[in-house]
Each structure stands twice: as structure tokens, then as C-alpha cells.
Length: 186
Image (cartoon, rainbow, N blue to C red; front, side):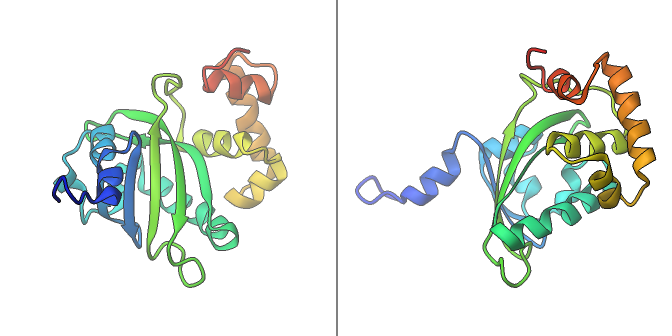
């Protein structure tokens, strides 16, 4: 790259104020410095690694794939807020948005993702994997019955987790629970 003829696309990717990553079948093929710094790695430590490296558990890595494929096939958009793991094991909330480059075929064969660290405004509360799953779905406005179908559990199980989450956070309803977990005013 010369100053006379800059590669603006490369400049934008490399210096974007959010983490950017290109994946092939959930393997990191390229990422920018904001992405690697967010997770506490050097870029070369992440390239050609499975995204599983950045999840709190293998179960969550598998589950999020199952949740994200249909929206990518339907609208070629996916977004959520989830807990991810840094290199040192610390957990943090981040906003994830994705776009498939192979939507009609296999939406995860090649995709572009953005990641924004939410830890400054959303501290991680000690939640189990199942509690995190239920909170994520509640935050997307799903009912207990819908969550139960997605997680292959009974609606009563979802209600029990929901009640424990309300108690754990001292919330009286789901709106207050989500507000508490996102550090927004009640």
C-alpha cells in the first residue's frame, strides 16, 4: 500500500473501531486488531483457529451455531449479545452481528462478523450455561414455550430457571431482570 494509492478496504478492516472477523465454517481466517485485543490474543494466535476457542464452553459453541443458522438463511443477518471468553479465561459480554457470504448454500461456510465489547456497561454475573441461554432468549423477547422448544426442555423447566434468575438478581419481572443484567436503569 502506498500513500498515493491506499487500499481503503484494508485500512477500514484493519482499523475499524469494532472487532471484525472473517470465518470459514466457524474457523477464523482473518481478524482485525480490535478483535484480537478484545479477546487478549495476537492476530496470528487466532487465524486458523476454531471459534470454539472464544466460547465459555463447547456446549455454548455448538448451541449458538444452531440458533444462528436459520436467521442467516432467512434474512442473511444475525445478531445477539452473548458472553464470550478471553484468553485469560475472563468472561465478558459482547454484541455480535453477522452476515453470510454463502447464504443460499451453507451460511456458515463463509461469513463476516463484528464484535463489540460491552463489559464497560454490562458486567458478567455468575450464571450457569443454561441460565445464560435463557437470559439470551428472554432478551430476544421469546416466551417460555418458545425457549423450551429451542432448548429441548419443558416450559416448566424454563419457568424454574426464570424464577431463579429473578431471585438471583432481585428483579420482580423479566424487564427488570434484563435491565439489571444489562446495567441499565431499572
